[in-house]
Image (cartoon, rainbow, N blue to C red; front, top):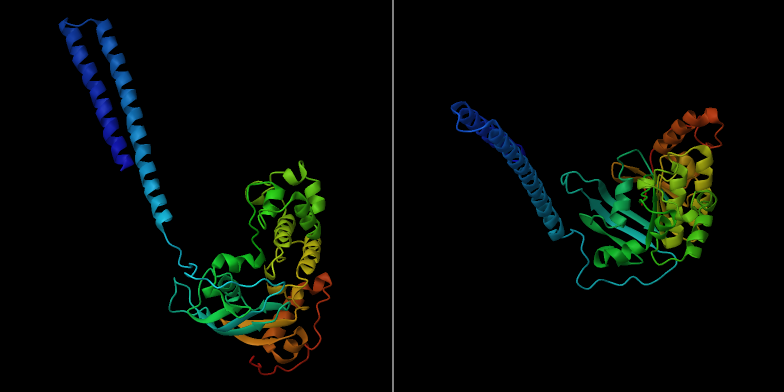
Length: 364
């Protein structure tokens, strides 16, 4: 529409200008108009044409703004699919939480016919450290999305301390959870404000203590303005490891009873991974923790490892138990060991080599 309007306006303005020049030239030839008067009319025509062009441009911008405002009004009127119930249940305070997935089945709205999670049953005790492992597309991240209540299960329930999160206020549920993901979200604000996002009412002292716990205080102090340094959009002034430590400091400041770690060290160099891993180990103390990791060396110390495939739980156990009885897990370990053996990896492999494959033992 704007292109059509521009074409019409341009044609009309140039047509009017040509008409004025033609009429004026005819009058000058006939002697009824002087050259100076023709020049005046030409200047008038140029001024009117320029004004007309400006008006047409303004009208186009006005139409664009009207279209944008219509979209904004649509967004403001949208109602979220996940809404708090009329009388939400109150989740009582506690330092550590129990999580229970009760026969959860889920399909994304865009693919209603394909279940991403199938009859998922898992009980996580308070303070337990659980690792979810499996190939890409196994449904690990979807488990996190359901726990954060970005979606509701198609069937089954998710309970925190025996309270169905579908019957609680989503904001209350999310206040209980801290997350450190592979793609760290930083804002175009200062380092202190990015950390304070975990708890907006935190004092500067509390922010510094959280940064120290996350091994971030040293590099933040070396920035131009310290904690007041603007980090740039998406933290463009920081390295990957520094971004991760800012995210960990944010989680430390929030002090949540439930911690979700989604590939938090997968794309870091050795030095950054060591610092981030140290910060994560401190952060996980006395918290119910769920970890997603393709790098299995980061989850061998987990209380239990949940092996997933195609939305199902294949087996649950500790690292050594799964090595001995689950061929798929043993193969994952072997493949990762083979790719890292030239780096002198000390990844525990006892029970993997020279062992005949056994049948998978399904979890209860």
